[in-house]
Length: 295
Image (cartoon, rainbow, N blue to C red):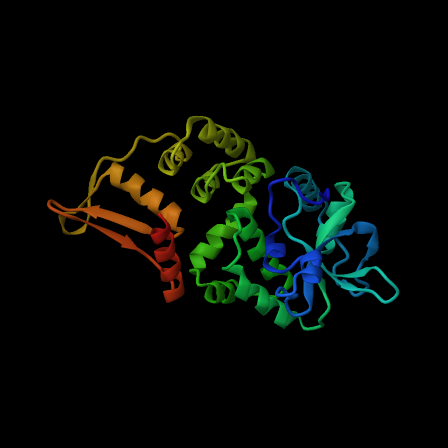
């Protein structure tokens, strides 16, 4: 296995397109708009001579180097073949520099044989909702589409059938410290736990609570309560039309929200209750129904 990725982690956008080997050996699988995924020797990649960015924030670059050492690089660079051999960088100068500083010999890359960035971007958008990505890989894929392919959050949410808040909340996972990101990528922490941790003031607090969540099997609701500085759970509160939202119902709604990746509200009246599940589009509704049918 290449040193470009840690064992057990996926490859972000790389999961959306065939690998170089698959594209060569599988007849029914073809590159997407002239692009394939591969892990390339860094020494084979030359910088883009038209790169407009010449100054890179040293602190931000150091943070990326640390993240790469901890969890690998989830966002592949984009390259194209160079006449005479090797590759020329199209997008990802900061990632290439950080990977070099981190001591990697190989780097995940999307090799683009077409000059049409729009076609490749659209193809990746079309395939994003079909890929089996963990929450962290999904966040990395979103960010790369925004950065490298001039995609807007509005366009992204519309094309993949997710609400704008869902996209924003997923992107926030990239702000977690590397050690916590690693737990999310491995499935030890859920996306709901991860979002709750982002409410803490610093990385040390996030890491400490993440360890406690795993050790004690804390629920998302319990995590949220701990994040809010240990405040006591609120007493059952009256809502509209005399309905009651009890702490137990709040925890259940949080579990459903985390499971379905959308907002769920549960209310209980005197004789019956209601469950309200929000969805952005008919495609998003179908996604939720499919999740329910699988259980």
